[in-house]
Image (cartoon, rainbow, N blue to C red; front, side):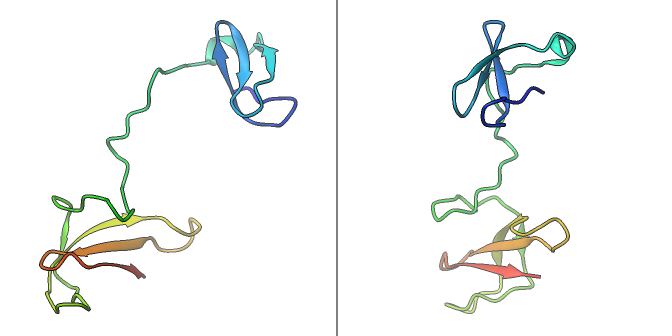
Amino acid sequence: MQFCDECGSMMHNQDGQMVCSSCGATQEQDSDLASEFVSTEAQDDSDVIETEEGANFEGKPTATDVTCEDCGHGEAWYTIKQTGSADEPPTRFFKCKACGHRWREYN
């Protein structure tokens, strides 16, 4: 990995020259790192967990140990996301299977 001398951001290879992703500065590729660089065209987002308002929870795991505050239903889809530092427990995001109400639970 090569970092920009100007701003410290990670650089990527573009036509044999290293280009900063943030400020656009260019540098020659470090010769001792040349064989270690791997470039990809696109990232795979199949393992991304969506927790935003429009996220599709249907088909996610189901929790039966929760109760919806809006309708009292006892089943909800959920996803888990690490919202704090690594030494804190993850946050569970729920969507009620009956009424669609969304909430989060911190452990």
